Amino acid sequence: MKKNYIFTNKEHPKKSIMSTVLGVLSVASLILAAYLSYMDKGAENMRYGCACFLAMLFAFVGVVLGVFGRMEKDKFYLFSYVGIVLNLLAIGMVSMILYAGALL
Image (cartoon, rainbow, N blue to C red; front, side, top):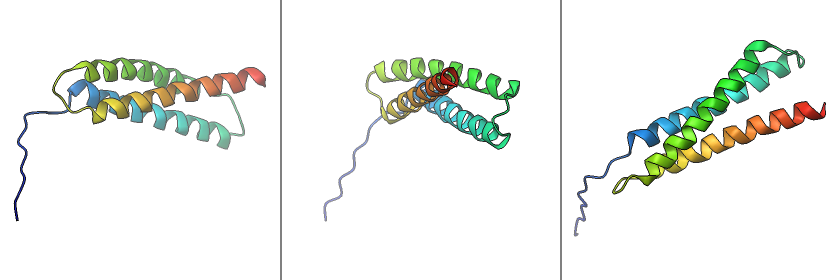
């Protein structure tokens, strides 16, 4: 049997890893804020609004970091793509929350 080893010096960009972490934090905090607001029978709490605002800021920073991580040459891009998708998902969730709040 022939063993194929590929040696490379590629690594994941630190910006991309941070983008993914920010995306996970944003999505998790938005889901938790929506769930806790639902459990309080829709009561408006300033803490949930602040959590959503910070999640939105984290998501915008995460998208920028993911794009900058993707622009680096000769790197692995898995965390770049995951970070960009998670952060865009968080921005979409905030948009849906704001849209639903405007209708009611």
